[in-house]
Length: 80
Image 1: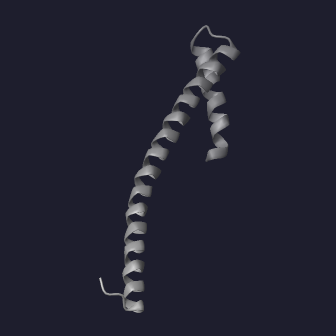
Image 2 (image 1 turned 180 degrees about the vertical axis):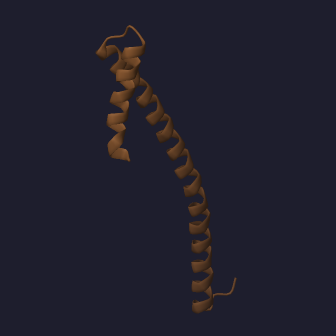
Image 3 (image 1 turned 90 degrees about the vertical axis):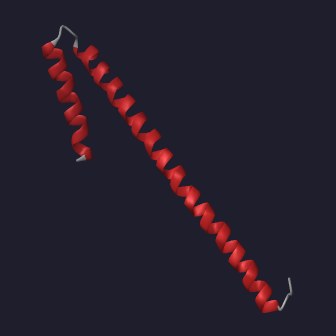
């Protein structure tokens, strides 16, 4: 499906050229600009989701460190 994206973008540019008085370069430029904006939006949303996922991992790592500290104190017989 990803391989069909350039073909679809070129077809959209061709359609835009036929519907307006734009040149081939103009219609391709407009379609490329829109595609870049959409790709940037997708990247931003992905980074935002990955950041949120990382926050839950940080809580798990902190809990693991606390559990390991407790386990070491139990094994070593440290009295707190």
